Image 1 (cartoon, helix red, strand yellow):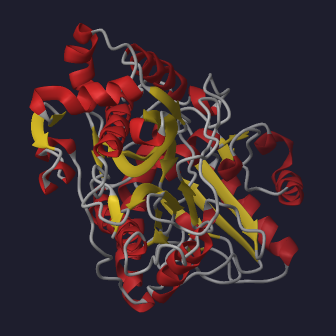
Image 2 (cartoon, rainbow, N blue to C red):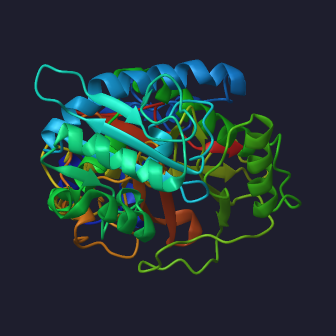
Length: 481
């Protein structure tokens, strides 16, 4: 990437930071060539927009196929069965829990509950109890439900119905018969997704169990986090397509088909994106956000975020942040666009260089991913690497999966570039997904040295050895002509 050139050549030329002088230096390399990933691209040629094959750059022109709600049932349930049959036993044994209880009520569902039940379950009917028991090595995990209504064929029903007191009595019998040593329940001080057991249900559980079994209760925090953060082979078959859907809608939104300079507002584009996802029957998990930066804005080195809601004009730098969930997997994506000025044939070269610096920052971050390292360790190492290359970056990367902001190692926060207690201390595990999120600021000559903020976020998987972007990453600008 550009900063490879920075390390090898820019410093030899006495350029100390990737600001305006850096842009001039980069654009002057090799007689008008921009070196990206060590390969030369003519800035005056359309080829500048294409990234090298090993760069994982990819342009997604539009969304692909979307299954109907009925068609989604089979792949969701197939992957859930695989998770319950093969992943859950390993995680229960890794975390030392031989019985796991998930107890919740209708309209107050435990966050983990919907990741454990098949389609088309919509809620915890009345009081729903799931019990997972590990009889020991070499034996299958027992999955039962003590509930008035069934939850599909993935669980054996062990209660025929009755009043609430009878239900709790039956749960206590099930537990007593199996005599578990460590009973995991979903209580957590620091992780919301692992804190789904309400206070009243916990009180009722303790009453039903009695003192001896009560002493065996432990937090299932580690099990819940590992269950939610871990991706299976079946899910990784689906995930790239899901990310493509999100990226494809951004490509549509950041084009002349949807933007009329001087007329369209950033809010118009936000609502277009939202409606487009609605039309595709793809649930969003937050309102899409779009903003624009332009010459004359007050974007300072210390500004956490640059860009405003406004009428889009020619010469604007656009940014969006979108997230969808499909087939129970969520995305989180931020990409950049540029609105060509009248007579301007392509994105200005200094903006091309700025995006390349953003890609270099991504490379520095993902190079630090190593099994067993904590989020705080990855953050500190990346910040040192970025500073060594003179890149002005902010890092706030987080896990992805069943939730857009999933549990796992937090790698920086936009308002805290130092260690994050507890969540930043979680270790990196293989087969976990992340939103590679952050930004760089670059001085732009054509904007009188003004800072432009390149805000990027792409969905990726860490396979234990390397980070792979699930549907490529943005290495070329979206262009509104």
